[in-house]
Length: 126
Image (cartoon, rainbow, N blue to C red):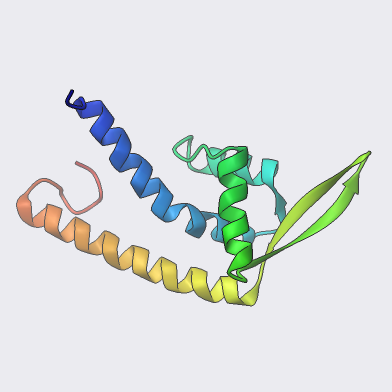
């Protein structure tokens, strides 16, 4: 059975978001240290709901960043529990800078091709 058009668009959207999630998490960590719930909430709010990454997916991304040496974590007691805060490291700041450069280069290239085709006026809107 063939996928419907919405399923294809959802798949592309998921892939776009997957490719930028780490960049956005690191960017937010340049502002302050966050714990997962806060980070998830601010990401959702600042993206106007386009990035709604919850629990397991957020932890997976943060663990991956931590394993690469881009972020560190610390535990702070809150009541009877501990809250884990994440902090961007210098290596993570350098990685973020390079990934942002790549992102903007790719974005410019995509917009130029769409502009050339007449499907886009060059400002990111269709």
